[in-house]
Image (cartoon, rainbow over all chains, first blue to last red; front, side, top):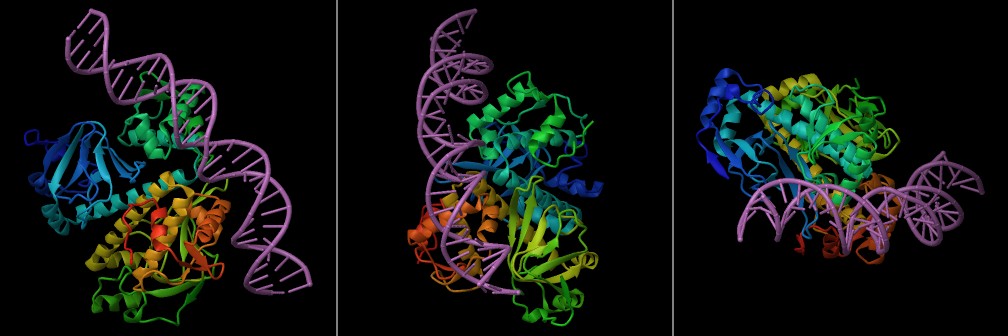
Length: 244
Length: 244
DNA sequence: CGGAGTCTTGAAATATGTCAACTCCCGTGG
DNA sequence: CCACGGGAGTTGACATATTTCAAGACTCCG
């Protein structure tokens, strides 16, 4: 982990400005945040926080990908969240987390010391309000994932995962479908996210490649060739779903 | 559904007073809530809210048990939450939910019209704060359940479920272990909660009965005879866990 | 007493996990 | 520049936990 004191991007120019915890903030409020923030970076594979750690800071993920994971005594692991740019780490009023946070790619965090930040919340309703919104969104996502983990088949899980990647990629404002996407995780990590084994992930991905739903250029870079088929494979509502 | 205008229990005498959304409220604040609230009751099996419904009210569950469930097109269903007394239904700033809420037993709700309630939140920090706490708790529970759904075996799932029942029963302030508990759900409902089939639930429950971990008096009433063994069977940390 | 909902139990089917070998990259260091 | 080594992915054969299908038993309630 590195503390980067130099490249302090101005909040107003921040790439995640409109989606992060500071989304609703006015110019003045940004100025306050500006004072408090500092960047930290982590290399791919670095742990960011361990389960049970005392939280000394909270942060927005600016760049890169991180995972929230739980591990059982015997080594079985399950991811319980995927952090992409603009996602938030930490909870108001909680000093501990009960999962591990790990950097999957190189990661840049926009950090705030927890205590000052919590003080800030009291005086900045825009932040508090956004924090609640984000917590409720996370809850919805978690519940959607419960359905996936409990009831979907391997194929449906993979399809849903890819489908979600497409959605989130577009949130950023990118074009619709048919563009190059990137798998942000190894197949083993995908397996841990979906409650599968890496072999099953490989086979299902292979199948969808063979069926012409997906097309890989590189081992990581791919494209959704047949979006309707992908949607169909998710097992979610049968309507074509935000189709062309 | 019935609107019960008569039996308006005073907040100060409410059985869930100390754990519900009003937990942190002072006497004055309770008076305000008192004005707004009304009771509704539902019979076992009644739907309380459907996915996509517009939320006209929010509520605390006073009595009984309800479930949050998602259903796929082809009928597969997954419960994503279990509501016991003191749990809250509804979200600040959200007018819709994307799961069904169903009364499993007869249920009594302490309801507030959504609009007035949201207005209230702004002026009653104690309620807003408690609401955030409760949302974060739900999130933790949801993530714990993701681990269960994704990685635990049938036996571990059942054990974890029973274990959770014991915990929650004690939260109310009851004595430790070795007392009569009640299965609040049918085995089919348990199956839907755990991502299993009812047959598997029956078999695993039967096994734990045969092994002398559980003992049933009635089809619904039972007792945990061997708590350490139960804890062991959950697959969670190996220490004996809040043992006698 | 009948009947429906709930639970139990068995046998067979199957999706996914497990184990194991092999390939393909890609970066490192000789 | 090549050889090496390790991580990642692929693929096959086999094992197995859980589901599926099916029949029957129990229990509560009208």
